[in-house]
Image 1 (cartoon, rainbow, N blue to C red):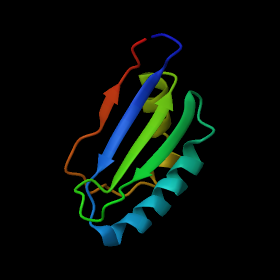
Image 2 (image 1 turned 90 degrees about the horizontal axis):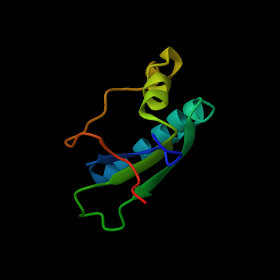
Image 3 (image 1 turned 45 degrees about the vertical axis):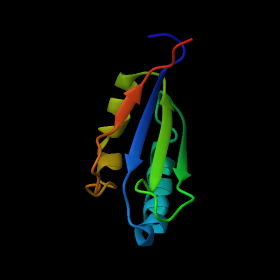
Image 4 (image 1 turned 120 degrees about the horizontal axis):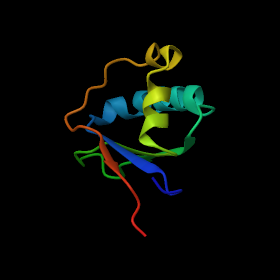
Length: 97
């Protein structure tokens, strides 16, 4: 792995009336994980068109897949997470160049 780390891209298909609640929950989870070793940053992107299929897109950067997996497996973090209502699986990508 290079110093580029990894990028986690997580897309959520949500009705408009669940967007604000989901953003609030995301902020709570990021606050819990912000100090985890290997965490770099996270940013949530919200759709502009209420009719668009994908409501939110989370982009997070980590030093490595192992750092991300270890942080997400922490009991303090997992206890805060309700099962998500996703129709698309998360997708990982590594920077090239």
